[in-house]
Image 1 (cartoon, rainbow, N blue to C red):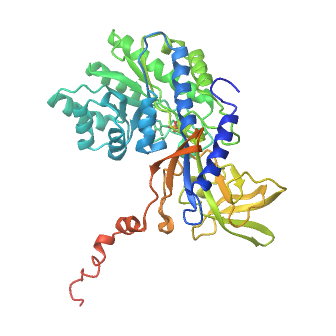
Image 2: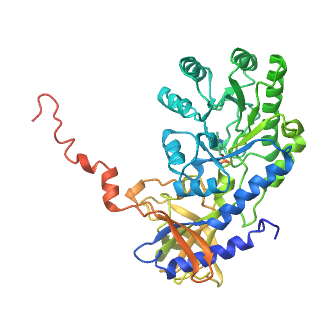
Image 3: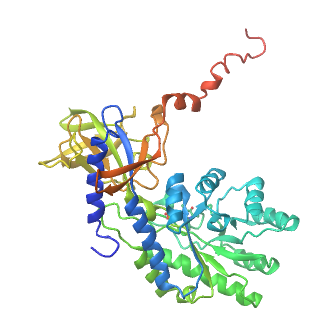
Length: 456
Ligand SMILES: *Cc1c(COP(=O)(O)O)cnc(C)c1O
């Protein structure tokens, strides 16, 4: 194991202890059959690893803001924890900005990117001094108006799409020829338009690109960054001064969902970037990064009780409480988003025994609601627990309200010498009253009071 525990042994041990303690301490059981668990130690380690990786490759004194992509894990206590570890926030909606502010993040630690910012959002961001990357010419027009009418401390830039191509997962490939994000740099006239935009606006000081997320190969990510850097160099050369002083390289480091090993690491990525784009790190540019999945994924676990164990057509099926509501992408696109599953017994101890090919099903009422299909695992029995690993990003924090299934409680944990494991509530389990309220409960009679002309 290296300094940061990248072999994942410490993480696996902490996870097993947390599952057992969650059962012992009553967080998990017949009446609370699903929880999300967050490994606070692991989150801190990843944050430290990220900072160290870029500190190693940048010239001394280079300003670097690591802005966590809030969409990966939109939970206020997580943002606060990351802030304590020196990590800011990348937000892409009024809701995400509200979460970042509730977590205590300052405008200087926050970056706003979204392809659909309204005039009100832009006005608020500029009033607060939050960094904004304009997605397209129409948005830049709106920003022009705001800059003319008021002074803002917001660092402002343009998002470009280097159009270097996509990866293995279309939905997370943001640098394809026709991607909806940013100014498509290779389109006819686009590069010249971008250069002019900076020439005409001395206050544009940043350049942003996010080449994609899970499924983008390393060299393609590096190419996206290299092309962004080359554009910044061209713009500064044409203007004759270093007007662009900060490059935002986006996030997108892929996560290894096949084992506990962290691969690739931030250190590997930072070194690969320095190799591919040395000028980016020589101190002339400040850096912003926007990692999401790679900071949180491996530190989250969904644990669900097996309500029933049955057999159908010769296949063992464990019916659990974790399905499409907490693992939406996996259930709908299982080929792109497979999750590791581990089996625990009714006391939360890792299950051993011969492996049996079985389905791990969720609670939702459609046949495809499977967390894993045909997976070889120790046979899950009624009252056991199935855990879906690496679900700290884009899973349990992304509840899908199918079947009005309640959002599970989320608990952070740390090893504790006295009690084994200490938990803190990150999000309470959703109550039935809250489900009713979110489903129009306050307007129960609304539709029966509407009558078309001529009807009763
Ligand atoms: C989603 C997103 C990120 C984070 O991507 P990850 O793959 O989670 O690291 C960063 N920047 C932008 C603009 C994004 O849309």
